[in-house]
Image (cartoon, rainbow, N blue to C red):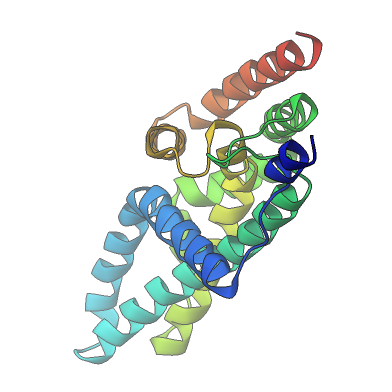
Length: 215
C-alpha cells in the first residue's frame, strides 16, 4: 500500500522540467496561432511598403511579429504554471490530460460560456478584420510596429485563451488535439460567419461539459 500511494503521488518538477514544458507550450502556441495571424502580418507588410524604406520596413515587421509572439509567450508561462499546479494536485495523468471529472467539466463549460460573452465577440471582431485593425490602431515606425503587435496579440489572446485551456482536457502533449483546436481557431477567424460559428461551438462545449459533469 505505501508503495502504491507513492506511485500515485506526482513527481516534483526540476528546473529543466519547467523549462522544457515552457518551451513546449511556446512552440505549441506559435504553431496553433501563427496560421490565423498570417493575413494580418501580410497586410501589415504591404502597408509598410508605402510608409518605410528598407531596412526600417523589415525592422518594423519584425517588431510586430516579436511583440505578437511575446504575448503568447506570456500566456505560455501562465499555462506552464497552471500545468504545474494541476500536476501537484494530481489532476493530470502522465499524458498531461485531465483525470478529474470536475476539472474536465469546468474547462468545457467555461470555454463554452466564454464563446457567448461580449469580450469574446469584441476580440474576435478585431482578429477577423485586419484592415479595420490596422486603420484603427496604426502607429508609424518601428515602435509603432511593436505597439500594434502587442495590441493584436492581446486581442488574439482575448479571443482564444479559453479554447487553449481545453488542451488540459485532450492532453497537453496530444498533437492531434492541438491541431484540431488550431484549425477551429483559424476557421473562426476566416469564415464569413465566424461569430455564429463561435456561438455554435459554445453551445456544443456547454452540452459536452454538462454531459461530462453528470455522466
